[in-house]
Image 1 (tube, rainbow, N blue to C red):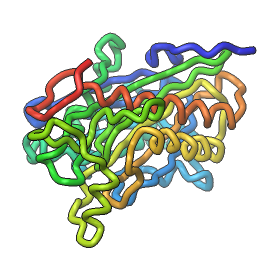
Image 2: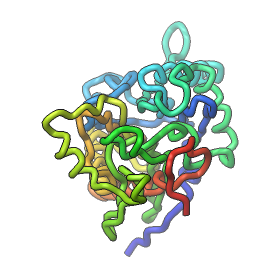
Image 3: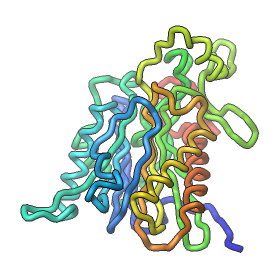
Image 4: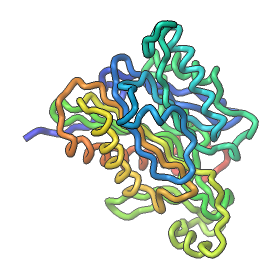
Length: 321
């Protein structure tokens, strides 16, 4: 029987991870660079996504690989970070070959963090480029209030007065030769919880009473006149050395959303833009059912890890362990 072990996500061959932030603006971006041909699929379950080039991931689209996935803050403004990633790749002659030069294929999703720092400071091309430079040194990659998690918060159903700081989380495992890991920036409207013991890890927090409120109950109480706006979103990616096509990766991305459901409550609301990418570089033959199940497992654990604060909490309550 194969043994499953936790691994450092940075050891999954063929990928480089980089963060960059504008700390004063409480925003940032995370880039996942593919060092070789890498197929990508996506599944969006939330009602308010901000995305770039996702149409290329449709199994019917001609595109057969991507060069980078970008997770960013800044709401739709943060899509500009991808331009810097394209510049970095173009300088290194990486991209889809055409008669007039190679065109880097970069897909991205953004979360809403404009209310944490300065709404006028957003991830831009310069920050996206810097995240790529930072990816050249694996030791610089960190979880917590870094990269796309810099301004991430949770528990916002009752407004910012009850919100808590969250961030970027990662987790990876190896089963036989198959490696699979999750990177996620958690900016959910609801709570993060531990499915194993039912404990709320972060979410709607009453500071005066020093206690958590139940997110679904709060949502139900507001159901007659909710006013949450589309200012949330959990965005993440699965990376693997498995061999899958775009159709299979779309299925794995859908199964990875089970990890969202295990760790976030409520999830996939119209106030979230919940999106998951899956990148596969085809080094190991693997079963789609096994990969999808593992994708859900590592995503749920990465979300739980995103509830622990590392870095600036920007004055918000946070969970430190």
